[in-house]
Image (cartoon, rainbow, N blue to C red):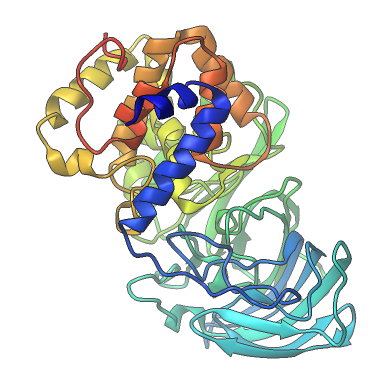
Length: 485
């Protein structure tokens, strides 16, 4: 790196500038698909994500999704209407939402609108008149389909096990059951209403407002409402026969749900694990400040999931094997609940910012164990480094640009290692002040912004540290400057 650039970078503003240069250089060496720009008064398909070019859309900010769905258990189809409240960020003669199901009708501000599908999930909407920049508007989409029959490559987030169905997945799942600006840079409120045959339960995010409208003997209508915005992939729904436990812990209402397909002994064990959530939240609050949401919970479906847990907002979804493992359950619960601060309250700006989410969630497992008198987080750093220092493939996946195929791989180890190394360099006071300041301010942010905030917490020049841990693609040298103790 030229000396002049190093001197420029040794400031918060310089770090932001330098990371942009690094990312431009990395992008020029790789080929990621892009979405062509639209006309000035047309929203673009895709939110500009370097990894997933057709995810999301431009031209508006979503404010709220009100999803009303009927589920037919015999045909495994849904009939649904979603009302989207949004604000235009530019004039909109047309705009996009993401939906993989069949659209029946669209209305914009109460008037019928033209629409057309393209690609896997692009739904282009052409309102009767152009929406002015800055205007609030509503979109009502009527749609239907069989989500369990839809796959994108090997991605199939609508799951079935017996008479149980769940929509949950990262980085995508919402297009399988509701239209949305499907990108984490645009969080919105969620209101989920699902009508099912009596005897089935429906669990989703936020607070349970009602479980039966009382107007139909053979059907129940479940209504869940979130009071804080969330990224679209953080919303989920599961339908089936569930045993529910409800209560209040530390002033927060909770709902825990475990599939009745698990044996009675397994359900008892799963609930015992989930009941640790309140204590774990308290431990995390001691490190990061107030829990950012008003509800708490957890769900254990019958499915064999591709993940141990998913940070669906306020109510993580856990893989049954993970939650039934007595030794592992507290780890996965800690990880997913830490995401409420890192990944949920503060979402990634783009998917290549995954470090800001997974690094903290993974380090939280170390930090909580250390606070409880277990293995010190610094010992974990050194242990993992000793195991991986000769593995070129491990270090080749950088934290600044892991790539779409390695998005959920080494960040779970390199990420917490980098954070612990940073803690050693800047000290506990600055380290935890950074974590609290970052996680207590809702919104979507980038790795660049995190690096700027980290530099602002210390007089130590962090540029060489960031080069070693965040930018670099080789093992950091075992030096004090790189955070080894």
